[in-house]
Length: 331
Image (cartoon, rainbow, N blue to C red; front, side):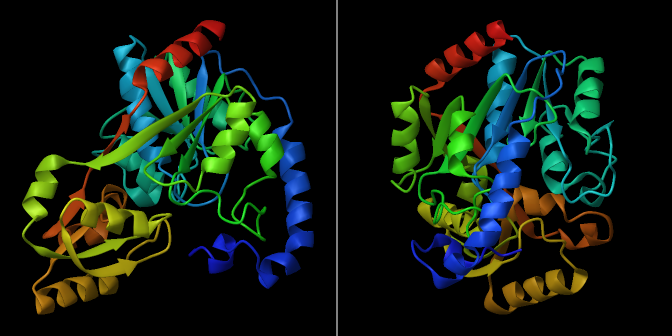
């Protein structure tokens, strides 16, 4: 779904009217978070966020996988497989599975790392361990108590922050902020801006380390797109972040098309995008995650659509590596 605009307004009548529902939802979510989780048998690092929508979890997961490999570990990604039809547990095969089966993010990540999907996270962890994982990087699931987490790294976008800081449905938070802060082992602020300053200060006051990172697009793809006018489309949590990234790297975005997160494109939609691009002399560009969903019956329509790979770079990688090593030793 598209996020409602009032989630990002400090004071909104709609938000106030939804406060009783938010209080009930928040109480249930907080009580659920407090439940003890099962031991996976190997360390579990959870990459999560406090709110619904996109913040940069997927590039963070892949960056952590690389960091852990450099540390001599064998990391596996564990995902719920949101948007996929298969319940798992199963190991994702990028050459065999489709996004409609395993979810777009797991399919995209499987090209870079071993990925297990499972609605039952305990069963998924058992499969990952049986396949040789020495550490599990859990994509999302911070509010889910099924597995005990040895480290929870929370991702926040510096420009977007936490919206109105209200609990769903009055705002974007998945649970009240206080119990979420109490279970945070580290905060990762991605990008430029001060929208996350309050949560940074709140965690720093508790002695929780705060790290920073930047998402950078693939240089070769950027070079190929420069000099062209593009029609950019995205069905992710925050499409505006994708469009801003293109412009920040000198790509002329002549048109934007926004779709809901995890949107399942139809042939008619893709034909319409291609027709518009052809009519106006534009190149089509989208995210890697959206490109992963263009499979099966849609595969023939991918020609001429450029996916933009991105990579997350930590500003304080040495300190993050030290924290992770400490957590692994403790586990």
